[in-house]
View 1 (cartoon, rainbow, N blue to C red):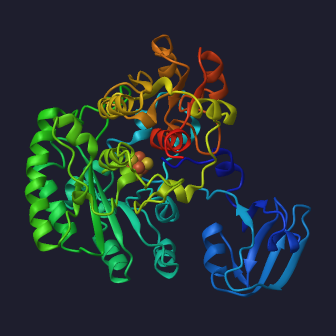
View 2 (cartoon, rainbow, N blue to C red):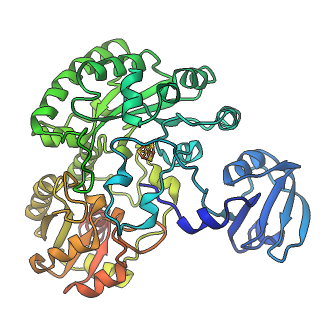
View 3 (tube, rainbow, N blue to C red):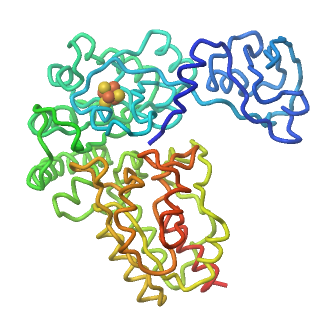
Length: 479
Ligand code: SF4
């Protein structure tokens, strides 16, 4: 989940230009005497609204003129040349997200506890963040300027929450008038201008399933390959979202949906050569049915939406379990699209001394994850233990913070982890890095990671299990 710095959304809303937050030492930016807090207002005479404008207007340019508003109020024109592809060494403020004008039945904001981090209440609907981080927009209130910008700056692909191509159903789900819900012309315009779209359907039993879902998927598939993929994810209701119009997703519902969508997937593979419409992992898990094969997911086009994450994990873990594995090169990049990389989050506050200590030991510890994923993780961790003599133990942590159907690891709170602290075994505990905000060491309920560490009887690290096991193997078995 991409989150926002909430304070700038209030204080910097109307300031022109983009603010520099960091200048790399000995970079061209430093040579030009650019400093944090300087605001670049124009590039080669063209106004800059945000980082994306800056990137677009500097791309490929070797002769540049910046108009810069310095922190002391002075305005400077800086003219310079740079080598082709030379990096300026500048980091910029976050984009202030544009807010949505919908009232979706299932909006996640309605499912938040009151004390959730303020950033979780930001209802973003922003084509820039869709391009940069894969956030979904409904396109229902996109302006003409934004539309032109997507096309001119090639902000492709766009991630679009379609939910249903049946207009009445879409308007009902979005809580807006049909006129606003109708995005058929906008989608056509984007596709005609070669902007690719990844579509999303949040599946609500009794509303956009069955025949409506079939029509949605067929309508979208008709525009393949410009509509590249469609993800179908189940509505997740927390204990705070009590809208009577929504029905919880049951195992029976998931089994029916799998059987209906499988028929379409077969048809699409035959006619388009790809699966095209992908069901979220949660649907297979709730149904108690096997996770599809690696081939089913192609290049995992919507993995960040929980589509194919389990398959990708299983395959990576299977690799770790091959004794002669040569693929354990450090930080190996996969072919999987990952928006998280685009976010360049800082590493969570794992204490490097603790990590070193753990990696040099015999891996006796407890891995904490969400209830949904725990059975998969346990199975593979047990195999790893048998193979390498490690003593790792997995606990599926109940999400008491959001409650309801929420069982994914990424939404576990500090209090949820505290609830299992008397069940920990071994010398350390490990939590998924995604539970910590990317730019600040806090958990979803606002608990500081440092406070969680202090309340735990053993050291806690926030690491990816595959990364950790890979590092441990490289250090202890593959020298
Ligand atoms: S588009 Fe819908 S789900 Fe998304 S933030 Fe707006 S109301 Fe919530």
